[in-house]
Length: 142
Image (cartoon, rainbow, N blue to C red):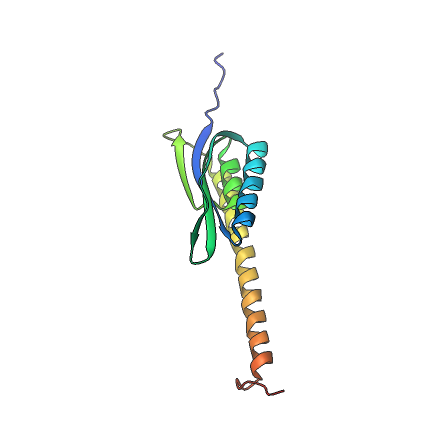
């Protein structure tokens, strides 16, 4: 009996960090680099020099990572939110429908969490604005 060979999935992602000051951006990228290298099967990790645009520092890394399962790729994407992703290997993939449904449910669940957070922040922002300006929209005088 021939043993089934599991084809690993190789992806290339771009991870970006932006903020201020430059030292914070660089140290955050260093921590991200260490974490990703520790947790995943990384074959390449190139970090690019931080640059300044309109007083915001940014840097990015191009990373190639091997994964055993599609679910793990999706989990990585949800946790690290790469700005771009390219699947390098394999050329074709097959997946059972229930596995795809599980993945999509995870994605949709995460999107609902984000939507709830945004709605709560928006409502809080409106509340604070009304409190500052007064209920009728005119600024309060102290």
